[in-house]
Amino acid sequence: MTSRSPMGALLACSAALWLGAGQARANEAIPATLAQAFKQAWSQQAEGAAAPARRDAAQGRKNAAGAWTAAPPVLELSGRSDRLNRNQGSREIELGVSAALWLPGERQLTLALADAELGALDSRQLAARWRLAGAVREAWWALQLAALDQQSAQTRITAAAQLARDVTRRVAAGDLSRADQHQADAAVATAEAEAAQAQAALAQAAQTLRSWGLAPDLARQDMALPEPNPEARELEAAHPALRELSDRARLAERSLALASRQRRGNPELLLSTTRQRASHGESSAQTVMLGLRIPFGSAGAHQARQAGASADQIEAQTLLALEQRRLRAEVESAQARLTAARAGAEAAARRAILARETRGFIEKAFRLGEADLPSRLRVEQEAFEAERQQARAGIGVSQAISALRQALGLLPL
Image (cartoon, rainbow, N blue to C red):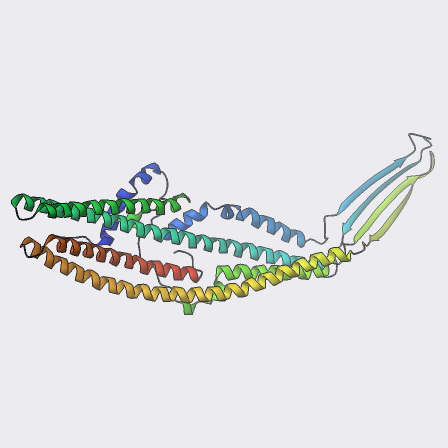
């Protein structure tokens, strides 16, 4: 009897597996790789859609910080007249402009804060992409394993049904007993029950990806992934999670510096001109006024702003140190997982070879009447399980590489 490898069987069943979803999404691009699935999932995230507007807002604050005044100038126009009471021709018209002035060093600190906000916005978006990549990776590989289990179960049904037909013919010929027939039929029923469970697990695994609007095409999925070199990458400088916290700490630091400078409100420069006359027949006189309004500071308000900025800085720096330790441990764990996955794949391959050879021996002995049906069923089960484990181990290696790339902060390629 000839058997297909589980990986080949997986690829062969994929088109049928996703036929319904493909027909329902005839005009939708179906991602064939993990990278395409991640890209499509990110395109539907609210944070990604809002990113351009957030950048425009941050850029607007930076442009405002680059102005020569702390706030837009204010134009003032007023007039006075006695027309409604005495009507002796008294009239006064005043036109003035006021502008808020920067405190010493405030403009430079505000520009630095605006630059930090733009950097924090970029790193925040990158970290959000990295976290989404982790969720997509987990769901993606869970789907690969579920699809493999489902196809393995279908292959087992086919083999068990073929064996049951052979047993039926031999029972009719008197070579085997009715008890053997029942055992063979029970093996078919067991395979069908396992297939139903595998199909349910596959539907559940696919639902996670469908919640992002994805319908992966497993028939074109490439399991091979490039393995990163952890020693060639500076984790502290490049990891999205660390960049996000580092930029957050820098933003808090610059907010604290600005809060320390803003001990009072901004002074205002006033420039106005007044044109007035006392009564009819008199000539108009014009005066010019130049003034400066200096507000008093509020110790309580300044202390609140400074304490809040200081708390944000301490929190961000503490979280950065904790995240650095956590990510280092995660990278070490992912490397150990990859080593174990490779060792397991090698052992599973050896087991599958031995199981296939044993199945060939017992199959031949059964045809010659030198082996009983329970032995044949047991060996068939062991062979199918060995092939399934070999295929799962192959996916497990790719899954471990994907987990290592996630730990290192690399997005799907």
